[in-house]
Image (cartoon, rainbow, N blue to C red):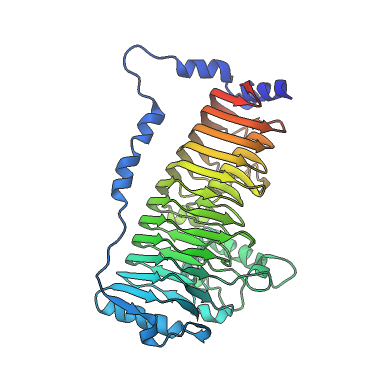
Length: 468
């Protein structure tokens, strides 16, 4: 098996460069000063981080209990949240305070200069009645814009918004509420997903893509749409209908010290910045039913129409437990993803499938490039430690080949997993450039898969005690 592993990793399948020759060629210093491209790329991080500054708010506080909210877990507080946010905004902004207690509510819509703050012991518990998330709002469902049920906490076109504190945001989704829409038998989201996709392909205006009542496309728990200066800090979020935290088309986003505890729901991604610029995700803990962090940029025809990338995304010192992927890009890559940096993260679970994952296919198009990962510890994974797959959903052909390359991984240490690498390009569209250095994969039980990759460089990489 070790001979086969070395052959796959150093072979020439579909144009794969020989790791020994390519690695030595890449390492050979030229005459004069040589700049390491990865070191130059990491030099961008301090500049990006300086631009990402959390919003600040006036020193006014507006308790929701002053507007009729009761923390008994049974009184509907939707109007109290609405009135408190309106009063805070009218005064010029400040803190909307959720005191200790359990507050049942429908959709919460944030306004400019409003910080929604949950005290320790406070829980916002969201209604299980879909009618409490009407009227429909402008949102995105899996990378496609539409009019649908409101996300549970939502802001559109706002400046300076925050969700902070030590409390809990509970979506209350379970197998009989929201999650059941993902499964057969009907009612299920399958027909509505196909309808939405066909509308986007046909160029139906977003205002006419009306779903909501009578349809079954699940809303997100937190979605901030076309917002500037966003902070989500300290809170615990759990049991979303699908994606938990979803900034879309936002600039200057900080997600800090957040716990996502949602391991059982379908598509319960942790944090999915989509078509966003300047994003910091730091010191968060993810335990999810899908990808922990998934960076996205719109899907297919609608992604080409909007044509907005995700760029300058920093993932620092996070813990990933259950999930399909730890740090993931895709599959919605159509607007393009670039300048992603992840470091000092710890990942481990028998139900964490992959640590570093890039997924797309020839229907998505777009690009994924300039992805830099270092100092990652993976104690255990259920599939490949590193996956770059251009055949997501088993689609190998299509009219929009994605451009994927310039991926650099340094100082990754993995304990147990079936394989170190699952790198699947396409004969007409290879993965162009994966560099792994100073990394150790200790107990890999299966052969790696490496097809249609050009520019693979492995330098000082050890697998099962052998240098490859």
